[in-house]
Image 1 (tube, rainbow, N blue to C red):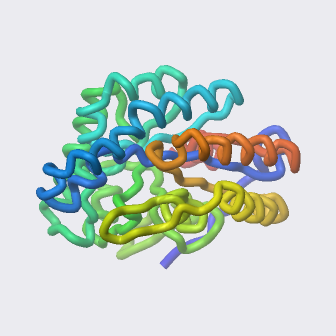
Image 2: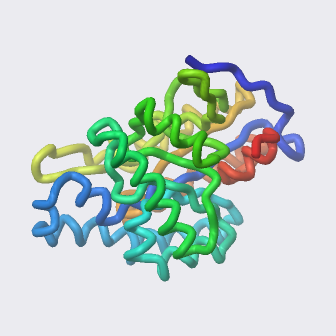
Image 3: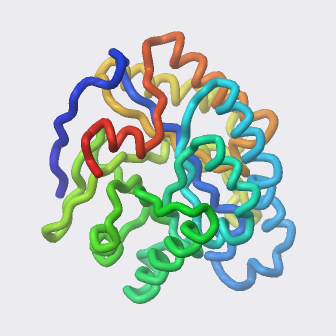
Length: 272
């Protein structure tokens, strides 16, 4: 079940709000699929591309356009690539919790779900010197056990559910959490990701930009929040980073849009 959330107008007379977010899965996203992936060095190298090339391109673009973002980072990614990702923290971007080994909560037991939260928190605190306020589950799946853990560990907000297209209260079994909803159509992975086993899509960047801008027009009309989800190894390719640049430019041409991290939006909504 869910509950509606009343909120004041966006800051400085903005017509809508946009949150740019990145899931920095790196190798953890594949290793979570099974131990056999430790032998798949080529697949792991593509994941690592997101750190070596994707993140620097993203940070350069966001810095040039003065846009804050939220980076959801698994604990294992922080442990492997902390030095590279520290640049995002130093640039003023937010780091959120994205599990530890990027294990889907619906595929593991209650003890492993707790371990994902605990070890992820420890790794992020140790690497970046901060305790994340927000959470995003691996593959956007949350079980009753994980939902309860979010309250137990004091998270202020989540970004894994799809029950509305506005910020809302996601509720389950007497617990509730501020939700910044996501959707597959606003994620780069369904459009661009490809694997040997499953194939996938290699959509033209212009087609993806068209979908996102059509959604933005709806967001501006309603005066609501839009959350984009991207992956550095995907959007960080040279021919795709322009999709993000064009989206930001077009948003600013269409209306006064407030670009903000999920933490900044939570503060605006008075949730801490």
